[in-house]
Image 1 (tube, rainbow, N blue to C red):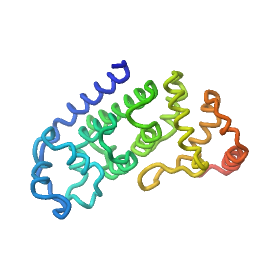
Image 2: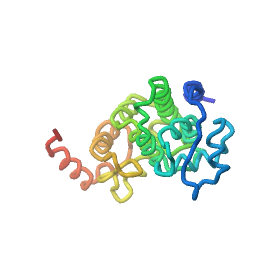
Image 3: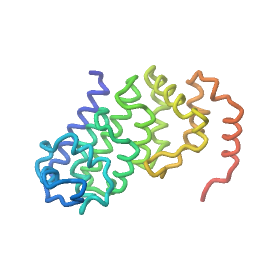
Length: 235
């Protein structure tokens, strides 16, 4: 296992310890979608909840639960470990949006800090591994929407000059340049983060210096970038 993958596993273990104080509680919710056996399992020990039930909750609408924020908070270590290892099979954009809905940044400091540490370790592992268990665009989308920041992750990418990071960049370019999606790219299950301004600017500046891809020189793309750059900044 590489050093960065080991650091990610260490961060995930620390996340488990930080959330160990989250006590089981009586979970109530939609009995049409979840039977009494499911609700009982969700109310019991975290490590005994079946993987498919964790996945179901990870992608479920908040209105299915009487106390969605508490349930999602308690399951966060299980959700996070499965997500970063590519085993969750739930749209990463949805996970990010639901974490925001659960107000994860307002959780007790040890909990939110441990989760931030996982995000940072996951990003470093992603930039040092190619291919990774989760496609680069999905990783970047989850991190961006969950933290409300794209630029911070792009800045780390700029300073990570590894063959794996360059290969991940090529993959991202292949993804977002299909039919010029990059010119109107949103992240998040509800398209809550408009990524085009920051990501396009980065791809045509810092990213362009390390990506041997002539598609980044397409006149339509450059014109779109110039037009956006000419717009006044939002107050």
